[in-house]
Amino acid sequence: MDGVTETSACEDVAREAASAQSALDQLEAEFHGLSRIGIALMRERDRKALLRMIVDQAKRLTHSDGGGLLLARKDEQGHRWLEPVLYVFDTLDGRFIPPSTRVPIDDTTIIGHAAHVKEPIVVADAYHLPRNALYHEGRQFDEEFGYRRRSMLAVPMLDQLGRVLGVLLCVNRKTVPTAQITSKAAADRFVIEYSDREVRLVRMLASQAAVAIENARLYAQIEYAFERFVCAAVSSIDLRDPATAGHSERVAKLATTLAQDLERRESGPYQNIRFTPSQMRELRFAALLHDIGKVAVPEAVLLKAKKLPHGGWERIDARFDLIRRTIELESCRSDTQAVLASRLQDLERERAVVRAANEPIPLEPGVAAELTRIAEQTYERVDGTTAPYLTRDELHYLLLASGTLDDRERAEIESHAVATRDLLSQIPWPDDLRDVVTYASEHHELLDGKGYPEHLAGDEIPLMTRLITIADIFDALTSSDRPYKPAVPVEQALEMLRASAAAGQLDPELVEVLTESASFRRHPAANQPDS
Image (cartoon, rainbow, N blue to C red; front, side, top):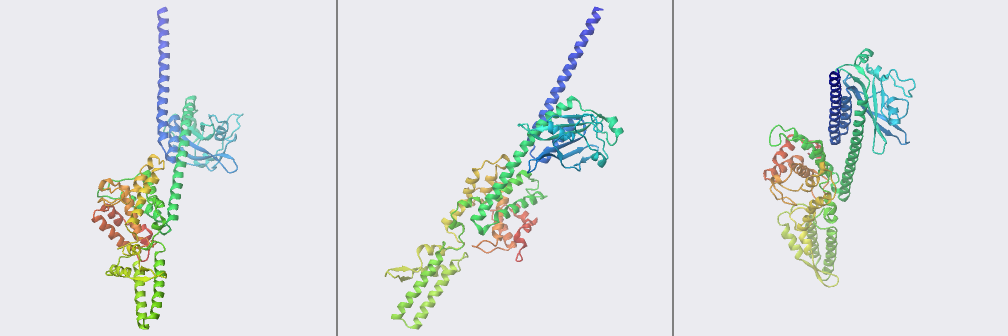
């Protein structure tokens, strides 16, 4: 007997050890499982996806038919309540928000009581609550959707300061995963109460969820802050250069539209290209900010609408008035009326030549020689000294072949690309926006290496930058708000883009996408009558 007793005792010890080991293995598995869940929650930045993941994991860990998530809200008067944001029930095959969109944080409901006392609440049967329970549970949800709630587990989610962020809810712990809980009989047969194990797991999940939700909120706040910064920066560009107000917005819209059209390509080098929402946001921000460096460009150059610097034509016009009076005084002593009329007629013709040459259009043949001849003429000033009709600097600007800027001024304008890079580089961009600086500052680079500021070529220029470049050129060509040039019709602008692509400056595939997918038709210029 002693041998039998000893053997039995050993078997008992072995069973206890096996049971303990099994429990330990289960705890370890739960720990690793929750760790993986926590990592997944921390990585998820999309709010809707995050909330769905939290509810799905709560249902999975507890074998629940239904789950829900309610987040704490506060109105202007400081009153707090719980707002249901997501309910998922296997039996109902979908998500449902109950008719009452607010749950007060007090002792009147199971969920509100859990948030009020900041402790998990376990209910064995929602239809038969304990006599001493302060809370009650209405049946409106069950009646509306043909459902039967029985066991419930409501666990508050608390932040690091112990404040209630929301409540994580589990409904109807099932013994059979596929069971449909639509009646009392089904609830009697398949639904059981939540044990301490489920409470422990959901509490741990609720803690992880609270951290993830807080992080998601902080990330959303950061996103909003960057969004407002970008909007403010674009406004500052528009204020600095009213003539091009709206340009950055139009470029951003066209660049993102072109990117979306590019994703639909079924052939060519970009047929498999796909952009994530984060990449599209990065493209949009870069396009919006591509001209922010213009805030560093001198206003006299930035807003220059004529070839002569600000006030230049007014000085010349006043000088020609003085020359006219001088001619009239001189004629009183020697010239006849016919000679005077001829000299004044010549002077007004010369004035007209100068006025026309000041416009930002190419010089007509022979005008340069005429301007040089005019500049060589002199008149006598009041103090007896002589001066030319046009100064050397004035002639320099009037002889510009096209546009309004000379080489020095153009260099100042082109410096906005470097200024864009320098300004944006000072901002602590998050990882998913780290390339905004590159895309924005390189929008004047050309594939043949003749762009600026770095003279990049070919594959050195990112795809996002190429999209912005084409959108920028198209908008600049077709815009009617530029004082230094007339708007180019849409079809002519497209032809100019094709010519630049043929010359190796622009990406021909992107120009083709712009034309074939009719991205340009969404541009305001495409809706103008003359387009």
